[in-house]
Length: 280
Image (cartoon, rainbow, N blue to C red; front, side):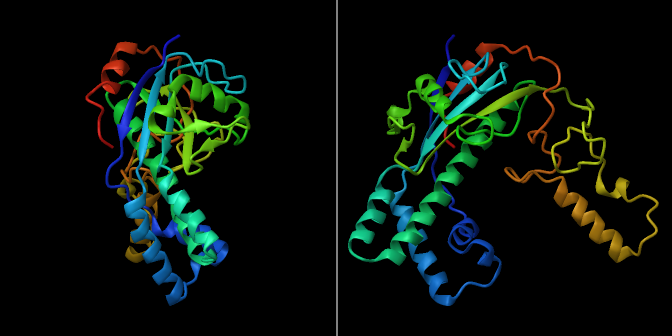
């Protein structure tokens, strides 16, 4: 069974400062960081902008992940591997060897945030590709997390051959460069206007239950609270409906029940993936 591959250029990668701070400070990230740390993070972000070379490769499989033993999804899915390249990692090692441990740690955190930004960009591209089909991307899953065994990392690499973007796999199934990501995105069938069953039986607005969510003004119709309270609730409802990846209200690409078995035309995805080595 073939996997249709496409290399992806990821230009102008935005590295989330908030994630860098969270990686460095943990729970204390909610507090205002000290001025010295703010300056150090700004310096590391500026340095990283010259060091990262984000790249990715996507692949479409019609019937699950060939060779994977722990992935239960046997329908269509998209595979992805992305990286920021090896240069930032090399710079952090140089800083550590010179005794500049603090700068090394901060730059390493920036690299981790950049790798996550690469994953988000690739995930967004998958959503954009799926918009031209009747399939909906579900949550991405990475080897080594949950029930997705690390051993199945080899299956992703066998299908995508990401050495072409500079990413290889060690004997212990670790990616090189370290600031790289791999994941799969199962695809579910979905028809606009279709109501998916809520297995929890409750209102899961914003959690991808698959329910059609009426506009906030309709949800608040007949509410007896004050205008200020109504506006606050409306703002909360609107925020709950906004996708955390693309920011769009009522985004259909959040986690959804699988629904009916999907019939997909492979040539559609092959043509989409081959569309000029699209930019991210």
